[in-house]
Length: 225
Image 1 (cartoon, rainbow, N blue to C red):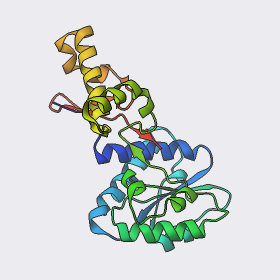
Image 2 (cartoon, rainbow, N blue to C red; image 1 turned 30 degrees about the vertical axis):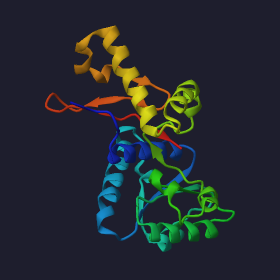
Image 3 (cartoon, rainbow, N blue to C red; image 1 turned 60 degrees about the vertical axis):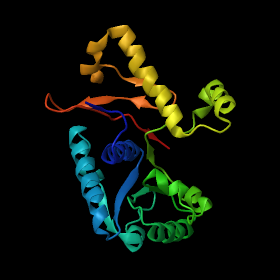
Image 4 (cartoon, rainbow, N blue to C red; image 1 turned 45 degrees about the horizontal axis):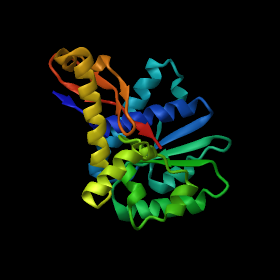
């Protein structure tokens, strides 16, 4: 079995890798604990993955991620002279709106990046200008800025359906291209070696990971925006 779309934990790990890369440029990384039980799993998983990756990359543990408690903790730990990256994994719209607004106002003339889930960018009660102020950064399974590559396919869809295609249309196009082109080139046996065939579509990135012989494949291909 194979899982084509990255899981939330895979996207979280992609964001952690991005933050680790940023550390090389003199950054401080914080994971925000908002006190909500259902989101504690991501706080714990992010910390564990982040610090394990530092060990694997032989990066000093002085750059390990620091857990902070809410907005007050985030402000208190701010480090002058560094890029301060705050990672907040929350889907609570009320909490997010308050956090983003206050962080944006407080961070004026400070070097701050807020990171989290993609759906925050589509939350109605969060001012997009505030997200811009805090340089909002998120992982995505889709290359959301490359839709123009499908201009001919979009036109065909519009002519046929009298509407605009959704993301599922572009995902389906790339999935079909990946599996059918590899089937043609390597035959049906390629399906048991997906991790050997990375591929960048226009909307999806295919980087399959195979943990062991007892499990299937998961696509770990992600983008950071």
